[in-house]
Amino acid sequence: MIPFALVLSILTGVQGNLEMLEEAVHRAVVPAADAVALEGVESLFILMEGEHEGGWLVRQTVTDLLAERGVRVEAERTEHQSCQLMVRPMELGVLYGAVERSWFLGGRRMGRSAVCRLAFTLTDENGAVIDTWRTDGLVQDTVSPGDAQNFEHRTEQWVNDRMPDMVGNKVLEPVVVTGVVAALIYLFYSSRAD
Image 1 (cartoon, one colour):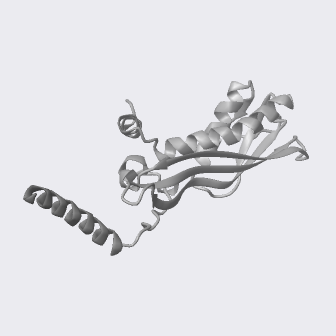
Image 2 (cartoon, rainbow, N blue to C red):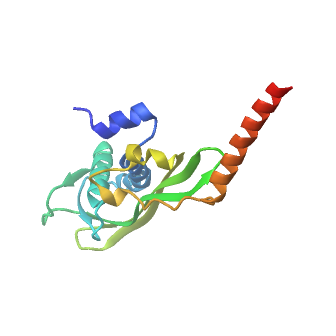
């Protein structure tokens, strides 16, 4: 069955926060997975550090990308395991920018950034550090805040940022719109009188 969020993002053309974050995590993990494979590691155990709610997403991505490179990820640490990969999410989530208008009366838009910053430490069977890496993944776009129901995730709330306050004078905008409409009505009726 196709996930509802994927269908919605296809229909609306707006990528969901979780999908956007998956792409950022993928971009952050690729350099570390390549480095582990270059070390000649055949199997390892992944230890997630920290208590981030998105740790499952990082672990899944690390496991998949290591498997693609021929590195077997063990479910449990054993005495015969030669290496351990410690992964700590330093920053993981979607951040919203300020809401702005492209033109004075144009539609409202806001920047959106999926950010993933990870720290990796690869150790041998004795716990000696083989190598460490810090990686970043960033995906950015611009969306309408009115489409929030299309891109915010309903169950994984940690993915969603707090909606920013709307920019613009809440008194001035209606006055300007009323003035423009009044001017158009005046022009319409004054051209009929001629």
